[in-house]
Length: 253
Image (cartoon, rainbow, N blue to C red):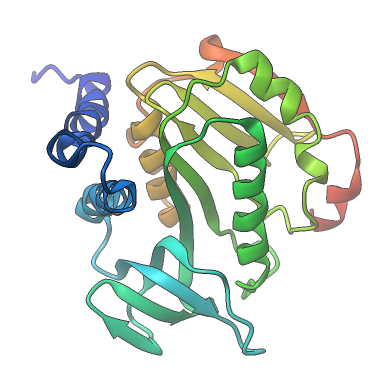
């Protein structure tokens, strides 16, 4: 029988992102930080695209809804390519809200919780314009950051009001955040009370972000939750928990 090592497989995904993220910076130094950021965005897009089913495409651009409201520019959009797009040139797209399955903000660094909260708010304001086809239609809404040194204590204290940040459906809120290659934040909407948990997942944070994206695209397949999860349980690695005590989200259940 072939010996399997899923943790090693997922760590290799993490290691690949870590290995190539600094190549452009090594060549250009700090002369063109904007180009460095775009390169890192492209790296993540390329890695995600390898795992996507054929029915999905990945790009950067804008989303427009039936009321002709348009989002701010979104770093990564995963959308159903079986429907027409309004505009496409290279990987830049303007797509219909009803086709969008995932949106991701990509950052090279996040140096403060103020920055992180601002990015959460942007992600959720964008998500509010991407209307749900059905009440429980979920959107993967994530923030992916290559480098972050914020402590778990600081994150836990600063995000204690996470559930009050924006008036956004629970099926549209930012629910997956990778901060460097070890810190992973995940919102648990399947538990009551709802909670935001922070985990220390050394060399697995990036991989968990991608695996949760893939699970969200394949939510009706029971085996996806097991085969796309690097660990049997993240519970031993939990560093903090922020509980929803507002009760206002009950209306979405």
